[in-house]
Length: 300
Image (cartoon, rainbow, N blue to C red; front, side, top):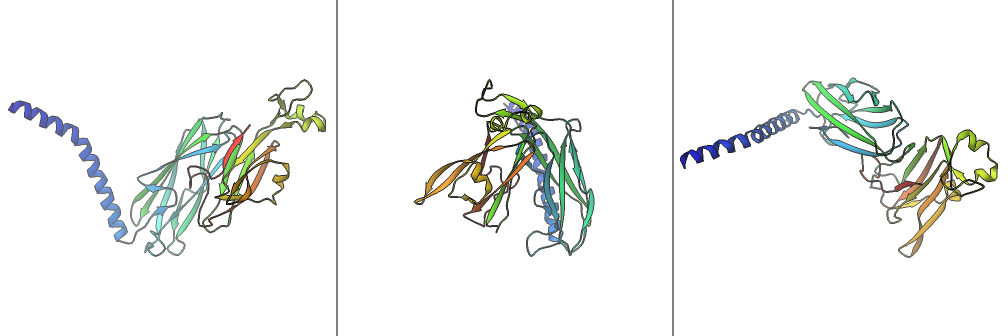
């Protein structure tokens, strides 16, 4: 019986030891961070975090570059800021056989008076990617003076619709947001059958240019649909895109609002659509800031 108890105790120690080491490391790191902040040292970011974080980006077209903006700063809030300049370096990690990761700067000093340094991580595809393929890029920022602290973020970027990128640009206090969709495809497809061509038939750009104007009217490179809830956002009906769109409506508080628009896009075309926000205190920026877009984007 005694021997069995000893064996059980030893097994418990073996099982709990890794947890104890991990917990001890967690406590040590957080105490270290607390002591740095107690000495008015704040090294933070709007996207990179202490201990790391992972973001999912699902709006990539797989052909064009991706720009991810982020900042490093020396404040905890609007009142507490660091007492001294902060020297730092930046590094990126990614699979160079798939993508290239470029930063507009790899080092710097956050001045006490400036408070914020801004950066852009550009992900450049080495080859075109297909639907649902993913690439991963990690950015690490490390301060060296007056204290050492490391922030990091990993961006997992997935192709949603090959050749088509979209994003939402917004900010707190703005009365409207901008939805931008960019088509990088170089082909057209038949939307409405004509002649010997059925729906879905693909034309190269040269083949499309050889068609008559009436035949071209039956084709599009991409047919995009934006769906949204007018309880959250209202599309700018003065936009030129409305005239070339098929719209659907819904009733909200007794008023009929547009809730969906479908429109054709040509090759190498970028389209911006403005939406007014019901609540200007919201920030609907996508991706990164929000994991799910307030406006649903689909193509056909």
